[in-house]
Length: 273
Image (tube, rainbow, N blue to C red):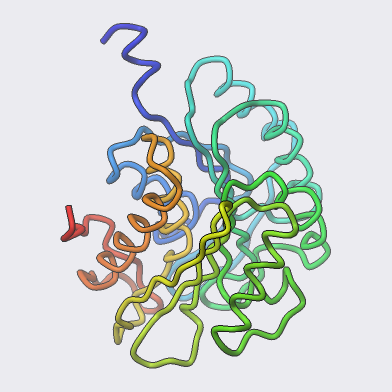
């Protein structure tokens, strides 16, 4: 493969924490990006001891090695889109923001990871303000679930109108596009996501709700799929719709791994393709 062809092959970056259980975090990002036929690269921010039952422990990496990972990638690869996941604390959020402003790694998907599926905190409470002030204004798209959207906006979200207001507030913080995910809604039959685009257009994405506990890593998978599609040059709406379809397929075509909240099936085939 020639140097020109090498630089043109779509490449994406996950800036996140590691999940030793393989279902969420950077591992979910890598699997998703690979399945979308994009070359995946990583900046590791934190390490978790984790399985389907929960997070047993985690450790954030020193900022020096985070910086050096960014330097290495910029020196060699042609990254076309990137995403953030678990960023641990204020120091690492600020560190990642500094690097994102220093290097051009394309459109940024911000998945504001705060709490693991089992309830363990993955972002220090005092770091939320830094995410709002420094990270979200850099976002091409931000993809919070309902608890994350509540934490970021201060709203109590109970219905569709509340989701719309949250989306508007997040866009007012600087995010170009917003996807407020409704997976935590009380509706037993349908999962509804609200999307607000930079051009002012908004729409709902709705999918059947599946009776399963195997949903570990849905947020990581969605944001990674959007990032992969953006790396291939898709427009933002196409990337979002592809992400939604892919996540729905990974749940519908489920696998059984572990004894708790099991992972998604990243081998899932999207029927529309």
